[in-house]
Each structure stands twice: as structure tokens, then as C-alpha cells.
Length: 275
Length: 173
Image (cartoon, rainbow over all chains, first blue to last red; front, side):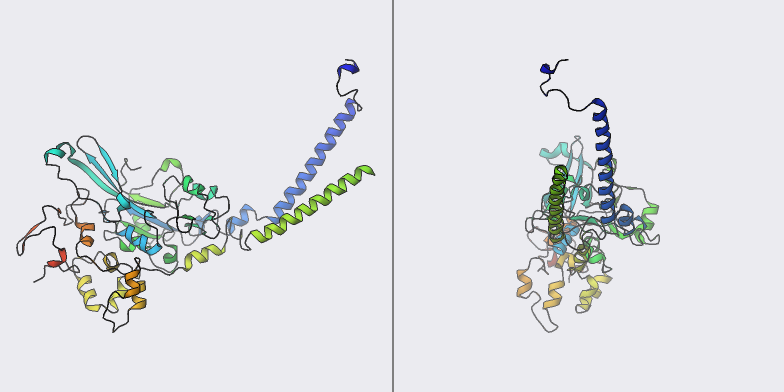
């Protein structure tokens, strides 16, 4: 190869020098990186420290709350929805908890209904023996109350860019309204539709299991309001609590188990059609 | 010597930039952020601090003892006082022992507080006939109504409480 065909001119360093400099630069990068990583480790709390503070893995705490919904008992009155709205000042058209009405008809039709989340109860069944409804004779039906599942593997907390979503050591997933910038990532991340952007505060809002009540020894407002005892709340760490005994003696299921979010809200009598 | 000068300049710039970053960060990030994890530790206490609005039926018993006794001993003791009447916090705070108005002005204006009952809407929440409800739950069809031995046919226009005592479900004399 002659000099004129090389646009950079003749190389000033030999091949040997080039490799030597490469090795030198590599060593420098390694040392610099090691210094940065060590400094960061010294300044930032490690995973183990965060764990011991009870944040990442709260499964060792004395009090871990759980929620159990017996769908076979729910009568769809909507008392829980009204109690929740009043207790937590939930804006019109938004819900921290709601009730869904599943109906199966003779013609194979399946309907899922949740007008106003069940706030005003549900409409009565149309008279199916009338000529216009003959093919709509109901086969079976049930109500399914829904709320935040307070997952162990939360899709919502991990997407928050400002650390406004967090989990307490009792396993309750909460939003810090002072920190939240209202970007709505968590609203989209939640596969259960449990979160919404509050139009009054412009921050993410969700069921807190009435954290202000449970920390004072009270039950969540929806649990107290339920006249059918379809909602059971308690400490799952205590094997003698009502919820622990029910969990031990019932066949329980969670919503969308295939997503692996591992919800702390569990259901008795959940139908395979429930989404 | 010329080479070292470049490094000193670069290093100085980096130190200044780093200093500015730490200063801004200290201002922007709350002091208790990261104490318990990637969030503001003080937020937990703030979330727990709110005052409960539903006080529970036991609280109502303090003043309304006769109604409470009838309700708690009757067939309608599963729905709580506040299910139909609304949350009691403002009511308890505003109403004194000798007041005659059960719904004084601040309560009337606050939709979250104790509400006057209609005597039919509250009943329909649970007792309207839908096939999803268990047959053991007494429910009525709003068009057909129901026929009673004592008072004839119930008509949709009338109120349930015209005949029934809502606290016990017993038919009034």
C-alpha cells in the first residue's frame, strides 16, 4: 500500500505502540469505572439495607394485610362502592372499588355490566317470559367486586419515574400525592385497572385498603359496609385471624394469575369467565 | 506539560458540574427520600393520618340507643347504620345532644356526610330482583311489586318505609 492511497497519511505510530495504548486505555477505563462504582456503593443504600428496612420484601413483617372476597356471598348492592366513595372522597365517575355483574343467557350470550361501578345498585332482570326477551332467559349469574390487588410483584411501582408509588412494610401499595407528577405510567401499567388519575388533585389515585383506618385498628370502609360478609380483611401473618383461617380452609384464586403479579387480594368462588 | 493542562481543565469542569448536581439534588429530593426504599418515608405517616369518616354503628348507639337496640336485635342488623344514612363524622361533630335538626346546614351541604334517607332507593340497592341474587334474599320486582296480606298490593310509587320499619323490616301497625 502506498502513502497516496491513504487519506490519513502515513501512520505515526507502529502497530506495537497502538496495541500498547489500547491496553493502557482499557486499564484506565477499568480503574475509573471501579472508582465510580465503589463511590456509588458507599453513597447509595444497598439492596440488603433496603430489604432490612422492610421495603422490598415485606414477607417477614409481623403484620401483613390480606383481602379476601367471597364472590358467592356478594349480592351486588354496591354498599362497598358508596362507602369507599364517601370515606375517600373519590370523584364522580371514578372508582377505587367497583362491582361487576356477570350474566349468562340461554342463547350463549355473556354480559359484564358495571353501570356506575354499582354505585346505585344494579338494574333488575328484564322479564324474560315476555315475547321480546324469550331467547334471553338467564342461565346463571353472579357479582364480582374488584379493587386494588396490592400485588407482591407490582407492575405499577416499578414504572414510577419519581418514586411516588411505594409499598409499606404491611404490603399495602400506596401513592404519595406530594411526589406524584401525574404522568399516568402506573395507570397504564396496572393490568387490573385499579388506578386512575384524580381529576381534582391531578395525581394517581387508588385503593389504599383504607390505610388511614387500618393503621388505627379499624377495618376498611368497604369491609364494614358489606352486609353479606363478602369482604374479609385482616392480618395474614397471624394464623389465628379470621382471614388466615378462611384462606386455610377455602379454595382461593387470584385475578389474572398468569401475569405473575402475585396479588394479596384473593377470591373465593372466582368463575373462569371472570377477567 | 501542555497535555496535563487539558486534564486539569477537564477535571475542574467535572468537579464544578458534580457540585452543581449535588446541590440541585439536595434541594430537589426530600430529606427522607430513600430512607425505607425508593420513596419518601414521611408519606406513610401522611397516608395514615387522615381521619376516618365512617365511625361504625357502635358510635351511633351512644345517642340513638333505642333505634340501635331495635336494629341490632332485628332481622336487618347486617347493613350498618352508615350504609343507608351516610358517613357519620360530620354529624357527630356538628349535632349536639339537644339539637332537633338531624341534618343541620353544614351536613346538608356536604354530600359526603350523613344524608336524609328516601325510604325506597336504599331498599332497592339490595332488594331489587336480579337473578344473580340468591333466592334466600327477599327481593321485589319494581313493576309487579309484591302482595301483602295486610295492606294489599305494593305499588312502585309508594315508599317501602310506608309499611316497613326500615330498622327491623317489621310491618308497621
